[in-house]
Amino acid sequence: MFNLGIIGRPNVGKSTLFNRIAGRRIAITDDMPGVTRDRIEVETSWLDKDFKLVDTAGFDLQADVLKKEMQEQFFKAIEEADFLILVVDASVGLHALDEIVCDMLRKCGKPFIIAVNKADSNAREQAINEFYKFGDVEIFPISALHGRNVDDILDYIYTYIPEKEETAEKGSNEDERIKIAVAGRPNVGKSSLLNAWLGEDRVIVTPLAGTTRDSIDVYFTYKNDKYIITDTAGIRKKSVMFKDTIEKYGYYRSIDAVKEADVVVAVIDGADGLNERDVKVISDAWEAGKPVVIAVNKWDIAGKDEKAVKNFKRTLAEKLQFLANPPLIFISAKTGKNCEKIFDAVKKLYLEYNKRVPTHAVNEVLRKALERHQPPVVGTRRLKFYYMTQVAARPPYFVAFVNNPQGVHFSYERFLVNMLREAFGFDGVPVRLSIRKRKSKYSDEGE
Image (cartoon, rainbow, N blue to C red; front, side):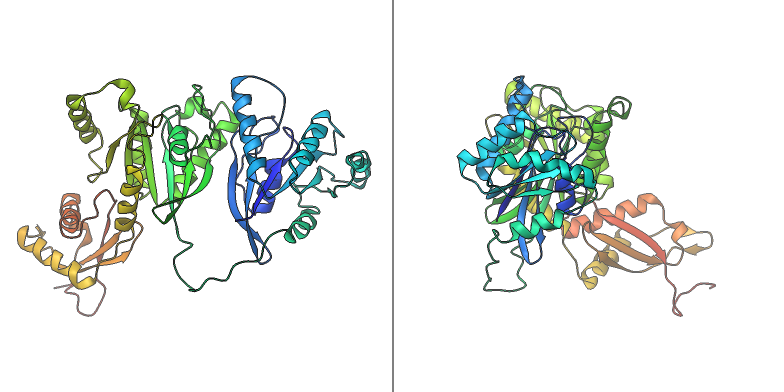
């Protein structure tokens, strides 16, 4: 797919332009330089052509460890791009770093344009004249915040994007992608896991907790299955996190990523063991109706043996009783050990998550359940079940119709859900059950 990269020095409005072109808020924006640290990608389109849009960290010459990692992502983005937008700031004027980046682009031979951002008025638009010293390159005065002239940029780039290739089969599921959210508390190895999958340092990894501040989407194919993998910002306690505005945005983006996912991969630090934040991350995903794969990272560093594995599984069962036999995989994101096994678990959960069961099969399970455990008498009448059916998937959602919904104890609901699992699987997947009163002329209401 055609790759369009947005580059420039810090705080010139790259992420605002990225969000404007993408049509929604994907990258975090803030007045503080250096908010974007990793490459952020999204597939989007202009007119009838599709392309991948990439936002990058701002280029500067500072040399600390984190900045060095950010610049490596910057250069990789240039290397992978088919076309680049160099964003500069009209309110500041020509900056030495703008000239350095422009020289880089000329040397690498990639086609590019210059977007002079924050040209919010005619006076500022006149101030772009100094940027013409760059020579033979197209220059566009824009306001990414208000959308001014952004369509002119896209119209120009449109001519560089190849035509769509016609596919032999229409209406196939070729474009269907499984959405994975990689979630967990800070510094457990989420970004390292993503890099292990991709075979490259796609996401910045440092010993500093909270290096990933935004949710990063990566498009990936494994065994012919297509995935969108979202590396989320580490989730801390709110009391700590909400002191930092940018981290607060990252928290809400992480929550949204979990809600939009098909499967959540919860990463746990094996050296630290399961703590309350891990339980909160997993329970939040489960309550959102998402199946969960539990990936225990750094198990090799901890030097655990088989006895430790058994103890960990016991602790997991005690603290996560609400889970239904979730996949548990011990990995090393650093060496890549067992990391690919996660995809096999994700695919299995995805199929269970989307499973639909015919009504006749559901009612056969209901019949057996009623034989095994007769409903109680409520008042003077026995609780009566008429029928049960699946009304939705993602997650599987069933409705049972009865004469008195208030008479169904939660323990009996749990019994029915367990019967459904016994018959149809749904391992590792939340199953919803709603009890409703049947409203029809055949109801025995009033008898």
